Length: 295
Image 1 (cartoon, helix red, strand yellow):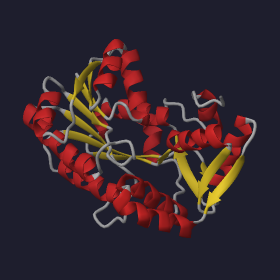
Image 2: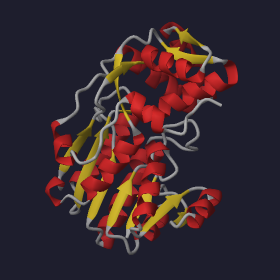
Image 3: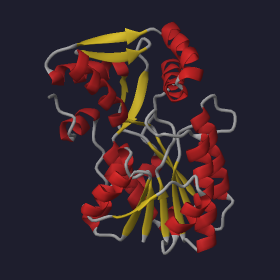
């Protein structure tokens, strides 16, 4: 039995779909009763609760041999925070899994996780990584680059509603994007690979693309619209104002500033050669196969 947390997120939904298709016994931990009903109807076993509660974590791992943690408290709709979810929730899961005799734990982390990183998410993920490394379980840590669908969904919604694709900053820095489907397939494949035990798996897409290029591509697919830039000074002011009024959005804005000012390019990692049977698709191929089509 596989326990999956974060099953309603961008990558999590792909993981659920793959597990349902495969017929592998699995349980999805979700905060939402409505999501649980939908999951059950589609063939998943669902449990309502969140891993921030140690008792829930204990109940969730019962009878499982593998845990895949894809949860995060980073997004504005998460209802929580990276400290509560990415650190404390994962710490609860790791402790509960080890005490229950779970054999393998797969943790979704982030590229450049570290104790001194300017992003709270990266610091909290690092804490979870350290706890997992110190556990007695077999473990795999995944470091994907930027999930493509996260940003195409935001741009597409803006195009649908307002006819504009919003780009933060100048948008000319190359960014490595990776498709959610590839990340999910890689996670499930890695979970079965005994030779990857104790590995940090770097997952990168096959190409680097600037936000300007991505926005232009979406405008072309949409059939109309224009690209609008939000200057970095405006982003900084927005993030400062949101810190107390809307802390969840402040996290997003600070992340946008970091992406505008940091090197986000990457090359496909060597470890991916061991997962070479999974097709790696370009950005255009990923978008062509997605459900994010113009309305």
